[in-house]
Image 1 (cartoon, rainbow, N blue to C red):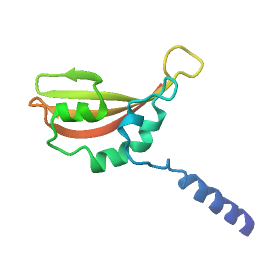
Image 2 (spheres, rainbow, N blue to C red):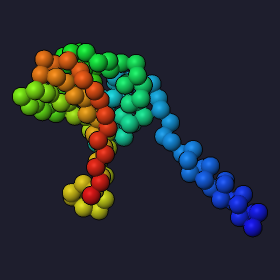
Image 3 (cartoon, rainbow, N blue to C red):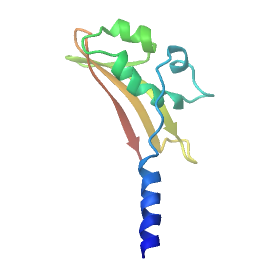
Image 4 (cartoon, one colour):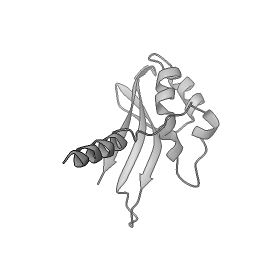
Length: 120
């Protein structure tokens, strides 16, 4: 019984310590896909949010840093979307996606950022 407890403790430790290693933001790497994917972007997001993207930044400055990308707009907001990851499984339609979202006010000042994770 005691051995089972130790085994479960070790398994739990490995399970909870498997967080993806974060790296420093690198503009060149951010804008260069690995083959056709941007899997490496996810490891840069914490550094990007902490050290580069600040509330009040202008849209043009963010696009200079991250590159121009999908831009959507409403009457009172603007949003940039950067692909992080797309998994197609064994189909032509995605089964999982991750997108880095950068939200702006209508006057083009940064409000917030987050990762949108979608699964089928």
